[in-house]
Image (cartoon, one colour):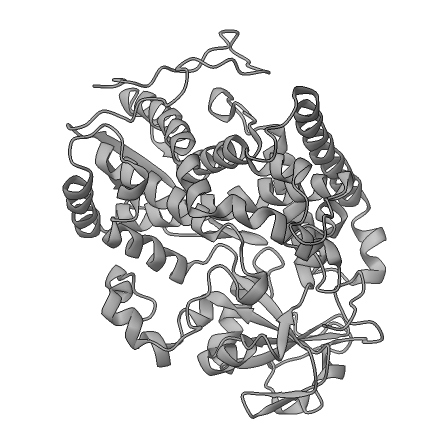
Length: 515
């Protein structure tokens, strides 16, 4: 079992990661280190991940940075990361920004410490909710939400407006996880501004990121106003989820055969008979709503950026879509997995910009990392996934270039294991990986079949960081293609949406829209 960790995300009794690295002096660090402050010269607290990528290029596959008295070890070399992926010697470490999310997510699947029993309980109860059978059941709801997106984009295209890609992908993925997992509708596409849940979520993620750049003893003073806003954001998230769960309890569940929320409320562990507590249900719902849409929206946004920038890739993907899906208005579940080239596009986007851009691993025992670096139990390192995905020893001298054929089956087989980690690693890797990949591939296929995507020639990719990554300010111009209509809604075409601001209370009926 991993060593018990403190609320700050560091092993108890450790003042910093250096106490678990006996030969830390062998690991390089940035020049011009300042007393007390550490390696802060030239740093931008808004982009700590991209700052670390810059240092990685200069310092090599393992390096360290000091900030306010704490030393952090970063790893990105493929050999080192492959060693850290050894589950017998290393485990997930909850630290840095992830630990800062524990006030809202507690011992949810993503933020639980290894010693907390609710992680295994929730994992075992919820894993069947991502089985092949369950995924096939979610497919129609994913199509329904995608139809609302295309209706929204049809209106923008008809009016000659560009579309806000990150904003609309966030709406799409929030509605998808809310509908499929919890039977809830946020009415995102009927709002002129982001849903308050999204605003509160972005606030908590941004606050967690910001806490990393402030000395812990000074945080209550320097971030007093921000801490009050964060407390209000957490309260809003809790109220939203409590209302959602309360409505399900009032309505009655599905006997344990329904969605993720049914499983949380009604299914006992198959061996122990234990059930999730009400508090843990809330934490798991928040975890799924946040993690289940935030990273997928970023992945879709980066993929659309690259598709718009590479029309030859879009044309090749579109030819595959037309060959596999034919003239049917909507694909079946099994047809999505047949879009192998489009999946390569998605994987290559995740290679360059994995939207969950880092994960931490801690030593379970005394060990030596890759035969070079001694580590004591509890010592940990942060894997910089975008740099692992750019390691020239694995990906070649042109690793910065977008090329979906890197994920041709033959190329994948030729690479060593553990070099592509957009969903983390080991037992604590993302439980919703197949859900996210199916949703993203389906949506990209539908959008490519319906629109020509045109990039702004003056746009230069800028990546914003809020623990996850997202392209900033990305807008595309759409050109409606002739061909199959948008997929018709799979449920009632006009659903009532609470909090509707335009007074109509009705959704856009998409079938045939824009033809």
